[in-house]
Amino acid sequence: MPTIVILGAAGRVGDAAARASLAAGWRVRGVGRGARTAQMAPGVEPVAADAADRAALIDACRGADVILNALNPQYTEWADKVLPMAEAVLAAAEASGATHMLPGNVYNFGYGIGLDTAEDAAQQGGTEKGRIRVAMEALFARAAAERGVQTIVLRAGDFYGGRRPGSWLDLMILAKLKRDVFVWPGPMDVPHAFAYLPDLARAFVALAERRGELARFARFHFAGHTLTGAAMKAATERALGRPLARRGVPWTLLRAGGLFVPMLREVAAMAYLWSTPHSLDGHRLAGAVGTLPSTDPVAAIGQAVRDLALDGRAGTADVVAGARRAA
Image 1 (cartoon, rainbow, N blue to C red):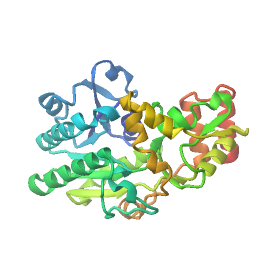
Image 2: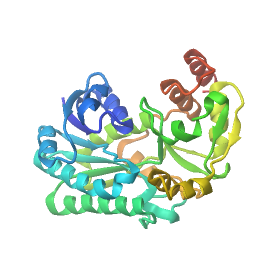
Image 3: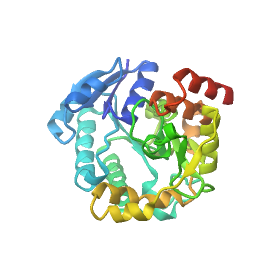
Image 4: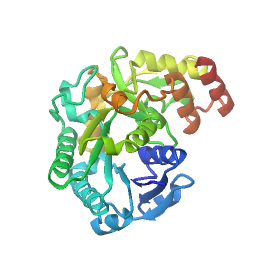
């Protein structure tokens, strides 16, 4: 039985990856801080360790075949924590001889991102967070070339779904669903890249099982769901079986608030992604692992509403029935 160590196993990506790995027959060890170890999926072997403590992280990862790096500091902490954590993860992967896997995002491509973005597209950074992500992937590429530490990057659009809150879906888009309001942060006709987390998690497992066939540094794009605001709203209405009112996001006010609240400033810096049409080309991933099952957006949204208890009007059975009818 192969062993995967998931860093941040109680978080959104980590929890989904843990469940998918367990379902595929992997032994799963989850690393988290303090009380977070009690929040991990059933079947995960919890290990308490701080990712900032290199020695503790190396010890937590001993015996791993794969290390999934699902660490995600708060937006306001990226400048201080992301690269030091990356160095610690590399040390743990090198010490254990494990393959390192990273959930990538679209920030690397900056303001020039477009439709059907491929793995070899220019990484311009653009924002501070984009430049940090570019630097992190460059660090992993150098470690692969110079020290033989394998890294597999699986890049995806905005995550949604799964059993853990904290995505754009629950924090903004469907945050007012109990009042029958759908919130979209940009023009309703602009395509936006999304990744339904249970589907993305299965893609990570598929790549992990073929790691021996891949390059020392390999990047893949997960196409996921490319949806406009109109398509997302229609899918949500089909899943729920009722119409929703549409509201926008006052980005000007958020930027003004960012002068006093750092988190608002960091969120507002990513507003361009809601007005810039973009999607990811998944052909390289399909070539490596074959065609993976993909959940229909209506069913995915319905399941996300159920898992995160976002709807105050419809009961669990109603949401599930609506999603099944739509699918």
